[in-house]
Length: 284
Ligand SMILES: NC(=O)C1=CN([C@@H]2O[C@H](COP(=O)(O)OP(=O)(O)OC[C@H]3O[C@@H](n4cnc5c(N)ncnc54)[C@H](O)[C@@H]3O)[C@@H](O)[C@H]2O)[C@@H](O)CC1
Ligand SMILES: Nc1ncnc2c1ncn2[C@@H]1O[C@H](COP(=O)(O)OP(=O)(O)O)[C@@H](O)[C@H]1O
Ligand SMILES: [Mg+2]
Image 1 (cartoon, rainbow, N blue to C red):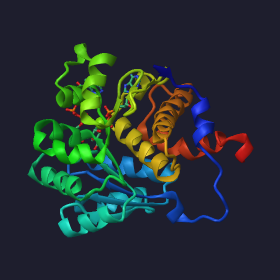
Image 2: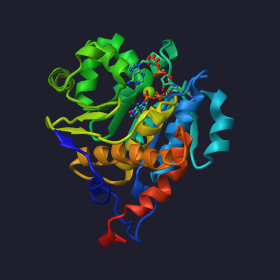
Image 3: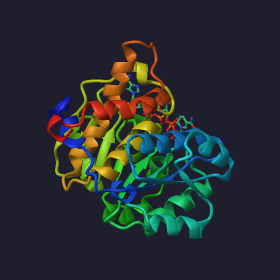
């Protein structure tokens, strides 16, 4: 197991070539945010944009449109219950993040099914929050999922639902066994988050802390992972996931020196400055 350290940041965060444009930094589609949980998909989308993705479209409830455009006018919008618009948006995305605040009702299940049917293996699919809870109850989605090699970002309770492993039973051996069956990357969120990669390697955080325990913190992490994957297009995308997970908690640690609790929106506000600081010196 590899304990992540700050070196991962300057390995991944590189200076931008002058001859580039928004299309060079990835198109991301976020899907989630029902009437109850609109904040989740707005935080995820905002984290994606602040971490540098070129173009982001948010498929969410129409109820969230005004809030989305007020908080992050850089984001485009489609209503998540328009199936043909969703299919169109899926086809033009490089990265798809589904689940923050999606809910688990019939509408949410149909939306997730549309994504699993229309996404292709060349796209990177990140599955978070409610989408993990739905999949735990819908094993008929597994054949579709295996072809897509997604990145799951469960907290321990979501991992319990998906893997069947009680939180007290979750250890590296059992977690790896189930993760390998899924043919997916698993970012298991907890104190000292552990990342199970498809090649069998395991990375772990030794940073982060309880000042991060506010709703929306995982939605923000999923957004940073999507934002990093959108622009840092390495063949070994494992390192990009590691860097995103590390950056999220490193920003929180810095803020926690001054603040008792760190809010997800505090992290989002600091991402750009943090990334600038860690651009590899030889690339500046
Ligand atoms: N502002 C918003 O709109 C928010 C929406 N959210 C969305 O709400 C939906 C439900 O997600 P929730 O996670 O709240 O609910 P869940 O029912 O999936 O899980 C939450 C419960 O799991 C338990 N748990 C055990 N170990 C845990 C761990 N390591 N980390 C976190 N929880 C652990 C806790 O008791 C917690 O109450 C998701 O789609 C999520 O994205 C949440 O992100 C909260 C904020
Ligand atoms: N005590 C803690 N120590 C370290 N990290 C924590 C702690 N509590 C929460 N976090 C981090 O906060 C995030 C919570 O994710 P999640 O439960 O999915 O949040 P939400 O769904 O509300 O957005 C994870 O990245 C997790 O590692
Ligand atoms: Mg979550």
